[in-house]
Length: 254
Figure (cartoon, rainbow, N blue to C red):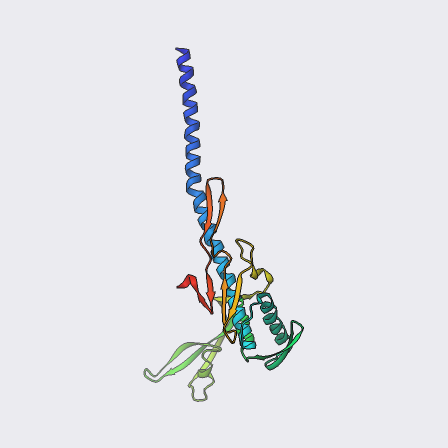
């Protein structure tokens, strides 16, 4: 009897551990693939974002020179150098010269090239702006009722009213109002060489320029032939490719 009880308790203990192990395996099967999918989506998004920046750099470069350049690293340096020149001299527009690859290159800097550069190469973020404005309490003649109405005037928005010489009214009090509003701001970033490399493989993006006037540029991800990496013995990180950009047309948006 005691022997049977001993074996019964032993099997009960073993079954409990087997149940715990099965639950752990079930959780791993649920959560590990989900995390891998999130990582795949994150890598794809980062890689495609980098390709967009490279395309924008080529586009800004073409506005200056009239053609594209397969030397992507040189393009990043070139457009950054032009931006720095404009920061140093606000009159750096129109026909200008720049030293590039041991040559003096003639370029044409459009009037609004700099504002476009700072808008394109920046990351938007939400912020709050706090401002203070005077609010006037005023009385104004209401000709329909023949009575004086009390109104509130914004120092800036209603300036046209209280500065009008024909306005029949008077300001009797002033208070300072605090205005808090949500706004979208932009954080600028520099065109670093890290943009040249795929975040997944570490390999450089493939940039090619074609056309008699070098007017066609293609930016291809190094993952075009697919990518696979073993994760946690039984799972795999798989990527069929991050796509490409051909003269501004993004393959993942077709």
